[in-house]
Length: 227
Image (cartoon, rainbow, N blue to C red; front, side, top):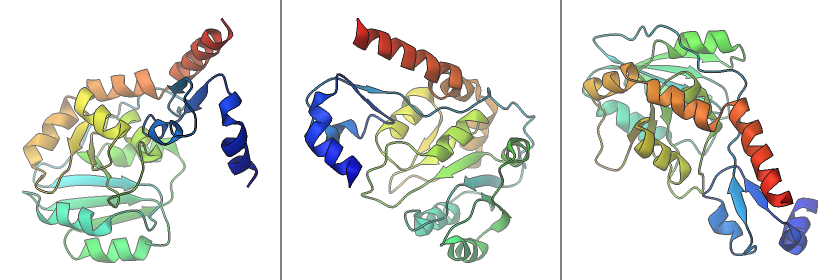
């Protein structure tokens, strides 16, 4: 309630609003006509450049993060069913829909569930065996960027994505994966090419999500406001 009241009654006093994604600025513009700046959440460290060890006879995918009611499990299953090769799904995370996701996917692919992993080295080891990361949410959600994307990009992993706004544009502009619509089917050769030629994904991480970039953007923004 405190934050709601501050935003409703006092947001107009701000010299500048910083948002974690640009998509949300579309909502804020209804209440606040002033200057806004997007600065993405950051992650310590640089790109994790492990040697890629993806299989040659199947597609290897990864899902990381909370397995909750906004994840589109049916859509993920549909993508796997329509893939041109059998799929291995690596799952890192937990949540109220964990069992439903595992059960649904075990019917159509090889599932490897690891639970929650905090150790970056262990996560990187799993990512090195994957062609792409899954970033699929239910339609009509107002999401511009997910934390799991930062994990994927830090490890040079292209994403299979369906959320609009910031992530959709990053995938398009930086060739960082495949944006899925109703008719899109994933193909082994496309994913392999993206995975092997992934310097652009590491650059995407460094230029948008590294701690150094975050500090630099904050400093520049403060200087601009104060000047």
